[in-house]
Image 1 (cartoon, rainbow, N blue to C red):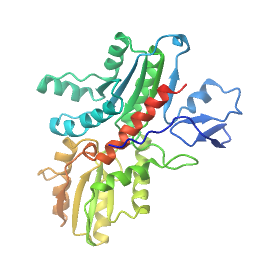
Image 2 (cartoon, one colour; image 1 turned 45 degrees about the horizontal axis):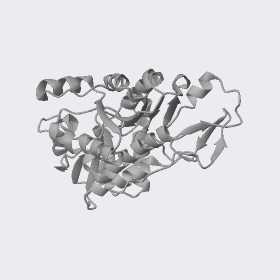
Image 3 (tube, rainbow, N blue to C red; image 1 turned 90 degrees about the vertical axis):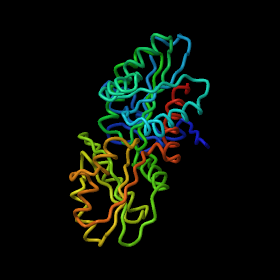
Image 4 (tube, rainbow, N blue to C red; image 1 turned 60 degrees about the vertical axis):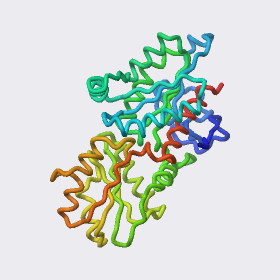
Length: 331
């Protein structure tokens, strides 16, 4: 697989704002160099995008590097192997001489896997404690989150709580983070081009319903931007809805009827095809999305595969991991 290696050095900086912030053309965000007296609060507010922490008290400690991959996880073993574990294998292949560790942020899933399969997958906190005990001094954290929602906030909290235990720590972004604002790249366009490689062809009266998760975090607004990019990329008759956020299925059905849609394909926009995809989306129960749509008069097909089964999407996650690694290596 061809990996798109990206340099973390910023070639140029522009577009200073009134607060003294300056965007970069890359995955991080930097203060305007004219700001010479930045307060701690201003510095913290500018920690957007890929984050890096250098511990001055460990500057002379020898480098021993690791990559920590953080995922929500799933109890669906078959999907886990095809998605999460497959992505981790490709991250490891891109860094064959580096220790790569997988952790899950869902403590409930960790407990269920241990009880059912006898496998202990560490929390990010436990994984970092183990790396520290084994003498690792620099850690690049890679996220398998789709958007920077509540789960990515967990990633950021782990970074903040454990960064001082190491000489250097970096935290990569979710698959979709930047949306083309100012000089930043458009991750959403990149993601949708990869995601759409699995879309079936649709006729005039057919549609694809993309099921996202939703989040109580204000970043739920990402879904409106994703729908905007779906439309601007002219991805025909593609509608996004969420299980636990906005928009929900009930807001989409009137749009389908207004457009004369007769048949829909349900497809998860989630890393794995777990409980939400198999039950909430495609289950036989009356409250499943499939059943609701059939009751509303639509013919329904289901595509029960997680994002991690899509090679083009996996490549994006590998690229995000590479960015975190390159930032760890940067002087």
